[in-house]
Amino acid sequence: NVRSYTSRSFDKPIWRDILGNVFMQKAIILAQLCLYVAVLVPFFSTDILQLRGISIGVSGWLLALAGPVGCLILCEICKLLTAFQMRKYQLGLAQRHAAEDQRLAAAAASRKVSAAPSFKAAAAPPSFKAAPPPAQAPSGVKF
Image 1 (tube, rainbow, N blue to C red):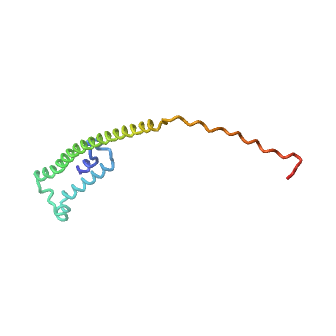
Image 2 (cartoon, rainbow, N blue to C red):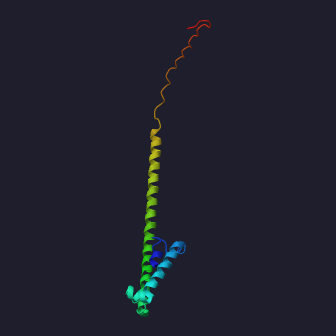
Image 3 (cartoon, one colour):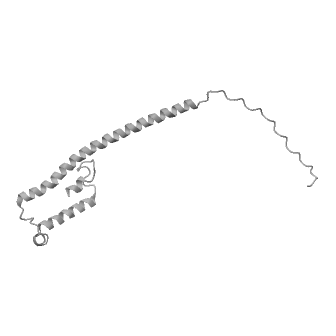
């Protein structure tokens, strides 16, 4: 169940917002209760599951606790490495985007300079006189 806490994030430590998900807390408590029932309830543990949870002694329980502690330590070390790699990648990505933005800005500026007309504007064509309005028919004439 320690793995449930360590696998919540790839780069954030286990103690960050450890109790933030209430449903996860309930699920982990239920899983621990089921584990203890399976290992410690005499008839269920010994005859059905054929486990020897009571007879393993202190050294067996210490060894059983060493597994989750080792998992926790190794997972947290991996998270440190992953966080470092993620920061390095994000920094490189930001630098590439900044370089691309500068390249595009320089290209746009050079297009503005090269698009400016280097010749004199042509003289406007001669204007034409507008045609006179059509003559109106006399008011008494019908067509």
